[in-house]
Image (cartoon, rainbow, N blue to C red; front, top):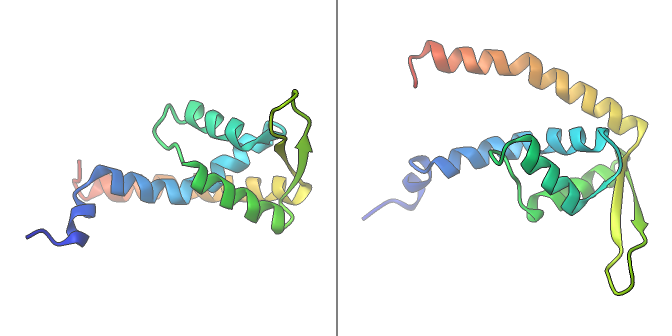
Length: 125
């Protein structure tokens, strides 16, 4: 009988999801640095810039967007749509959100080489 906890550790999707959890917030900030965007647009842009490697779900994106707006890192406005279509919520970074992106980017840039080095020096392939 398989232990339900050990299955995840042998599943590549488990490890990719851990990377996604930490990386997604940075990528959402990156997309919003390019300009205002809505949830679906952000998701599509993330799919494009990561070549499909680190694509979060709507269930991941919207809590991040809610957090960014509630903490003052982003503003949200409703965008008018064509007849019959739902209004889209368009997100824009605030100056605080721009600063958060810059800090996050530097943190990732300074950390990734050490992570890579640690993995490679241990002979893991």
